[in-house]
Length: 324
Ligand code: CP
Image 1 (cartoon, rainbow, N blue to C red):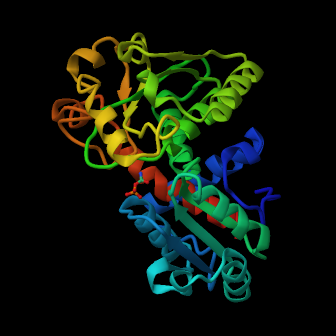
Image 2: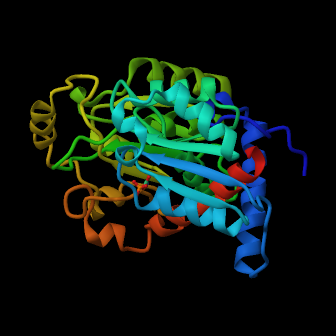
């Protein structure tokens, strides 16, 4: 397989062409098949990936670490509170030192206004590829898995409607990175996107503008609505998912109060019935059951959430095998 991706950073899908992303999907499909058939794929034998997690994770940590094992390499879990980052070591020194030891650095850093800047600083100083495991702006690996899942379910994705909808979920203010990465990538692969959120929950203006450009370039629609149901009507795919009102306010108390203003923004059977009869329900997980979505929907026949979570493993293995 042609590979011009060795050494490339993966901070956002925007930095990669559709053809380059297709290389990831093609290899992911091969690796998925090989795993199913029990064939080993030691494409990264003796290679090491450093995984720095500033934030909690179930899927991302385990899919990356397991992926490195399955490729014959090793993933090292690093927590900043156990690193010299906790004593103020800067991104440049961390990047330069880890680059002398291993073959890749992956980072999750979701602090609003800080995460993406940290990743870019590491990438600017690293001698090895840097992979974004989610920041405040993007969650590109999640969206690769989402797109692979949609393609597996529908075979061809051009002309499908995807509804990306805000949902009300309490307790903490979730990042903007999933909906932002969705609206950027999906139009590039021919999907019409409807994004629905209450007015206070708008996404970063420059990301919405870039999504509009992506849709125009691909000849598909990108619409924004403040009506929940608009994301569901005639949709082939729906991704109802909570995020914080971070563009409106950085005050956590105010953010949580705004989330409670819209309790009816929950995915249920009635909303799903507005979609096309083949509509699938997706969510990156973790989902706040009962608040974001009813059990009936997330555990029902339209839900593909575990296929979606599984695909994290396959796309990330492909990404690592191509870049490290
Ligand atoms: N979807 C996702 O990134 O899950 P984790 O937060 O568990 O890694």
